[in-house]
Amino acid sequence: MLTPEDITGWFPDAELVRVHPEAVPDGLDDPATRAVLTDAGLPGNLLDVVEINPDLPERIETMDDVYRHYDDTPPPGSAALFELGHAGGSLLGVDGTTGAVSQVSGQTGVRLLATSLEAFLRILGAVSQRISDEDDPHDVDVERFAAAARAEVRERLAEIDPGALPEATVAWDDVIGDLATSDEW
Image 1: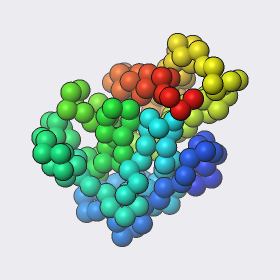
Image 2: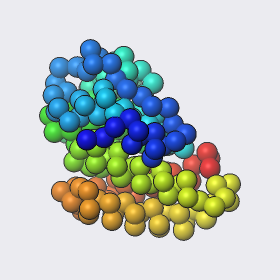
Image 3: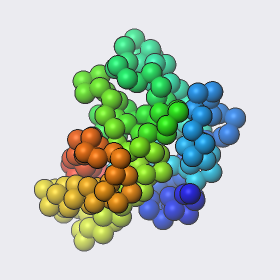
């Protein structure tokens, strides 16, 4: 089980975001996911690429509701998902029943990142640590970083979340690409 110390250790520059227990909606029933959201928390931001919705502590919306705000139709397969924020140009959603975390986009549909919120945070935490290990964050070799981070993600997926393989590598490749080219280095 994750702790707030795990999250702040992996994401030392990010604000810890925790959901108020009364804000967890019906339908978000997976106990492990509820525990991460309300107890351990989430990193508020990683290089302005992975960002948690600032309203999350007070309100978690379904993907249907989020898309409705934009007068848009959610992609197929997103009905059971609750919005956490965004990862690059896609929304970040968690399945209320299973806890699986996915990228959600009208262009690419729903793409799995991890089979649980905890696995997602552990893998993202490893990427955050790789970012912290960069010698000069203002002079990053984007291709070298992206290749190393993708290899790290694949290794962590195999170790922590093998059930997400090989499907999750496509979505993670997008997230890594967005992190590597972030203006926040």
